[in-house]
Image (tube, rainbow, N blue to C red; front, side):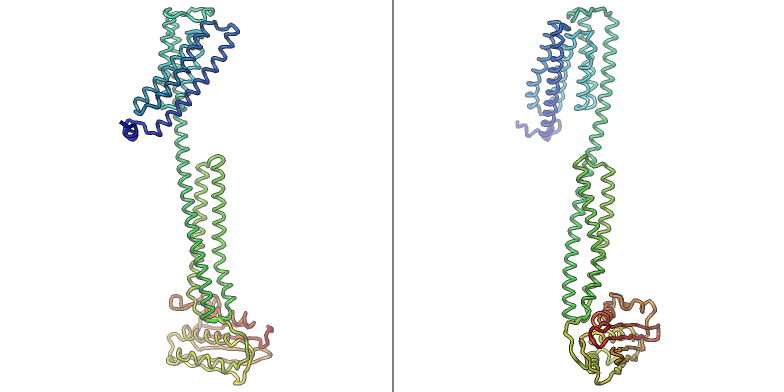
Length: 499
């Protein structure tokens, strides 16, 4: 039957477990060999200085050599084991051989009087406590006590000779029993300490493993956040591309004279949330790099990971809110459908031009009962931008029709246009329902409208303001009270460059 068929079955070791156990025993073999070689080197000096006799040194050398020799067949045999119970029995056999070898070393160094060498047993118990299950130190302590007790009673009953008789042997049976009991108790105390320490180490390893798992989860969350940020950045780029496209469409469709001012205003509005988003993303990246650096150098603590997750959550929320704000601004901008200006200046008759604009708009108010009157000299010729005056006239009239005359049967609009001291005075008024004080204050703000959701773009009067102040270099003032209509006073220099 092939070994592979048993790997995943209950009671059998997996390939990974076999490799892990083999590496553990290989490490143990090196530790045993190194310890025996070290002890033998010290005892060689003792022998050379006649501290121990020849028989003791030969016995120690044979015992230590046997333990070293048996490591090799044990390791080879370990590779053949696939059953868990067989492995546990085999592991116990290896420990028994090692304890037996250690007991022989203690015997040849003095027998029962060599109980000061309990450190040999203690080292084995400590090592087993680190690498084996928590019950193993007690098993090893029991075996050590049993082997030492057997050796002590065999020596006491003269079944085996005393070693290093120059020390003398004066122990009674009671004393031998007490020595064995004291040694056993000491070994059990060591086993308890080793088992307890091993338990703490396992808990620490488990805690570290949990922290590593949490860290991996954090990495996954960070990667997910980074992916979301990348996706939002892509969407933001698409929104910016759409914004540019919308701007181009506005230039082509609306002929807006104040395009530069409008774009600058929108760009300023978008720049704030985008700037905050970029700053938050950069801050989050710095925190990610800092966490990676901490993990690389010493391993991140739970508090550091929790602090990072809190910071990452706050930064992500900030980025999300600001990107949503920018997206909303872009959405509003895409809805803009107003006239744009892109023509050169020329000389034209202002009265005739305004009449022509009103004529083109006649269909929008001819059935409403509203009237429009233009008071302007018939020969008023100026050198300016006709499209600009078309935009001003159109937006003012449409503002009255949509807002001022809402619910009214007969509205009146009056244009009073005249020249005064090198300036063009352009006065517009209607007898509509007027505006509140708050609306008057905000009338020229971009995207401000009282018809939100009813077709109002909120850009009409903002465009007029930009045209007058930026393109023509003039001023515009609005006056109105609720129920008393509205008036706009525009003053424009007739000569270019005058302000």
